[in-house]
Length: 166
Image 1: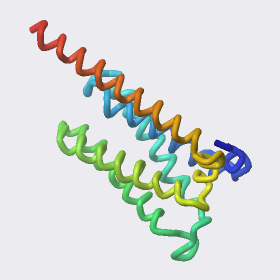
Image 2: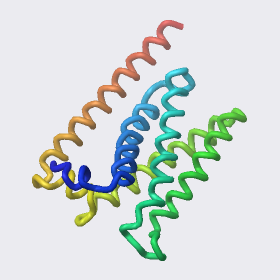
Image 3: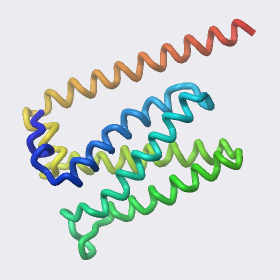
């Protein structure tokens, strides 16, 4: 791993990448933890703010030009902003099903899928994560997978105890 490609980038790219990485971590926690709690709501609000930052900052990044200064990834940013508005409106009117579907779709499409495009050889995040042949990225991925597994097991254990207590 070599963060030089990121630390020498413009401030907009650093803000964009930082917000995206925090969105990934926070979004994962929001999806894994119990829904409807004050913690879920607070983390969800923070996630929305981070995703708005990611989407809006993308319009200032024009390194990959396909249509004037923009590319198809910028269309994904519009989709993200519209999706965030729809998800917030859904939960405010009590439509949990629509909120869950939209937020899960945004996490998978706007964050995971778009994030995967940044790992293509020649892109900045590819240089950051795979400069050492990919070993650091592999260990980070394994650690993250272990953390998710632990959270899921603890969550299942807690939910099992709640069922037994009834």
